[in-house]
Amino acid sequence: MPLTVKRLGNLIGAELIGLDLTQSLDEATVAEVRRAWLDNLVLVIRGQDITPAQHVAFSERLGDPERGNALSHYNHPEHAEILMVTNHMINGKPSETRNTGRQWHSDLSYTLRPPMGSILHAREIPEVGGDTMFSNMYAAYETLSPAMQAFLDPLQAVHDFMNSKDMARRDPVTVEAMKQRTPPVAQPVVRVHPETGRRALYVHEAATTHIEGLTPEESRAILDFLFRHCETHEHIYRHRWQLHDIVMWDNRCVSHIALFDYSHSSPRHMLRTTLIGTPSGSVRSRGTPADLRAVAAG
Ligand code: OGA
Ligand code: MN
Image (cartoon, rainbow, N blue to C red; front, side):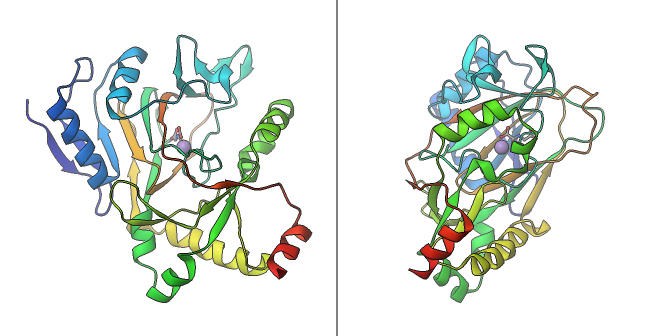
């Protein structure tokens, strides 16, 4: 069956119709999926009642799935490539991934190898709520003035997973262990997409703490402006989940947020594979505001 690409949003998002991920795909179909992904940034494939093994097999056709996430107790018991984004109890405790993505972010931007893409499969969804929103970060860059683009182009911003509000709600012992393993990382404020060559803004409210070389006050003002600019509705596709949807996004040019407008008494169970990306960024230490001021002063 030929593949149809149906646009879902004005600047971002399309549905792929005609795929059956219980079957293995031929090379020509995989090439079409890749093309549609680069063109539309977010792809939706509905009605895929697939097993975790089929989810991994599909992911492997598009890239190299990361194995064994840092939060390894949330990996699927039989598939280290799958992270469970779930509000089920895990080992008798509320899952730490139940509040994943509540602020705008790009997955793992605070690492030296931020993933190219993520592929999420809806296994259980609440009766109401729990949508995910995706923002086109090429558009965010392209709608800035040439003067602002030129100002931002050479800058680096620091990303730290500790910046996320979710960390306060997590188990302090796990957070401390992650803190030791995961120092902050400076990333370009404007990233050149390695496949399309297009420039995309790469700052995210959940992780980006400050822009290097500016005073803390300048950095705060510019970042707040950029965060608001990225959430403008013109740049967004909002996905309303149906059971067995697959949604895949390109982390290099998309920011996303998981809305918490449902109750944790309604199960929401999603499985994610994460495709390894190209190296980007350099390690920084966790500074205090006073240190940042010293850095900005030169
Ligand atoms: C993620 C994520 C969004 C959601 O898995 O990376 O942000 O709606 N999930 O669950
Ligand atoms: Mn995410």
